[in-house]
Length: 371
Image (cartoon, rainbow, N blue to C red; front, side, top):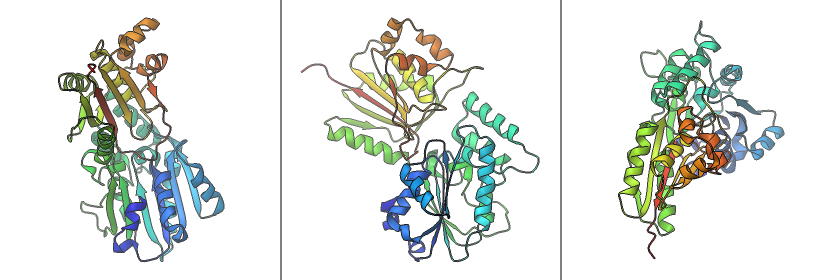
């Protein structure tokens, strides 16, 4: 963020006062990045983020100014706070000073955290859609399109409320890094046949490929031969586990770096876990007995589904370790309860909020046991 702003386009260098709205799971770190570069220009700030994702430094800033405000909301399923946040966002936009330059900071999670529904659509319908999409394993693109159809501010509709030149910066967690899809298009282009001008200048400043390259560089610096797959993975978690394990086991010793977003179809009453924990446990089964392999499956935002764990780290012995505890790992997979058995053997990874959100990482190591 700070690097981008220091090299910002001319539209940002007008030295006008800034009105900053940061929305998403990475909203706090994005807002602090702006404050690091141009705190003296920030006259208005609205942050809408997930519970527990606001950094203490930002809360301090908010306490020091009556024009700085932080709202915590619900993710991954919206609730009444999401609607209240949507109302607050619209009111905030309506009160923008004419001399201010609006700066929007958008990251993944905005789909659930803030909402204003079309007339006749209720919260129960919105919640049911989100639960159905998550349970059925919809892709993020499909879920975001469905969310946008219920929304009066998604899919580019919010642009109608922005009447002065503005800038929007995005951290992308979607394939293609399209602002029309990020956050269900909360700050996406107006498009269509709408009869108003779109005056928002948009820039994607971070994406999954940046995280993948950083992981690959770190592995290379540690002396590993690295294979980075530039194609994002998607689809069923079981098929992905089989494919990744085959690639890892049948090649030479190396680090394998993949990224994307898998999907899990949930039973009626799922247990504890998220798609990365489910993927990690699936890999533990496929790799069972291979003591040369290690795998990390984790979300870059530090959360996995509705849990506070980022994902899990498993080896070729993890499945056997679970079996020795008396727990049934196969049943855990069938009941979407991977988190329970992975915690028992100490395989869960907990980082806390990371300040970014660009998708999921799947990292594998296969080493040569010979000296």
